[in-house]
Length: 380
Image (cartoon, rainbow, N blue to C red; front, top):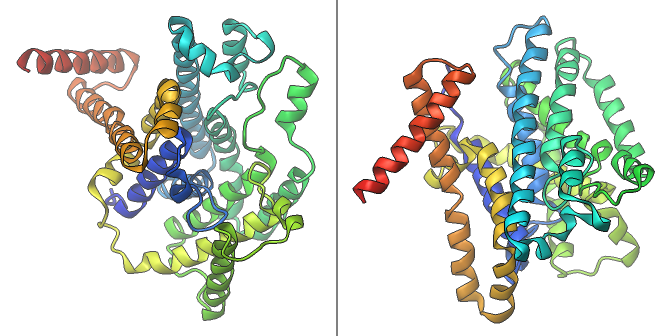
């Protein structure tokens, strides 16, 4: 088995920390939210996740069946995490009336907790930061078809279709349409699947040609790099108001539908990144961040819960304290992301000890983690 690419784990860790800080909010997000232009950590995370999905299937049998099975396994895992996270958030509001008043988007228009859970289970209700996992789930199920098309060399038809869906998404959001039809005030989420699939497909393509075709040199011409640098610099200056962007162009950097100028900004940064990453060995990474990135799914779910749990305190910290206190608060929140990573690593160790990956083995592994925590508590 090839060694992990610690650069990519580090990047995922960076994006998780940035998403945590940005979702908590405060004065410091002026420096952390879209620091290099109109490119959010979520967009980078989606594109990188598509890359990792394709890259990790490089040893999968090319007959399609193995890809489909692997995709269903991944989608089922994402679904379990999504449902569990949704149930935990609802439980938080039931045992803490204070949190219910702050997390009111869970229950729009008088929706009951049971109704919220049922709509969440159906992937229709996506309040707060609950939109990424359903999008990953659906895109994972579609990925085998795309990867099999790549294996046949059908790159152009796939990207024509992906661009066509993106263009459709500029005028239509399927989840918003469903929310309007159902009419129960469900939250359609922050991501238009028709638009955001283009980032996933692009990540799949880069991961496929890198992992399967062993091509690592993208956009070889210096012209591509020069054009990307000029575009990225212009977007950076516009994002931070060093230059005035005409009001009529604000529409084209909108995030939820991934408008044209935002998309151009993203791909200009992708070109620069693909050029620069070649100078960093794959075994190099920042220890804590690469640790978070390795366990990105449990860490992501934990940060959604963490942001919700801290909500009653977060706005007070931002409103009543200065940068130093707020920075310490955010640093503590970011450091706590290591908790789910440590727990999941302990679970993996116990799973290897048990030697079985069926449900019985997984339950035994979780019991082993609990026993280990109890022993550590008694020793302290």
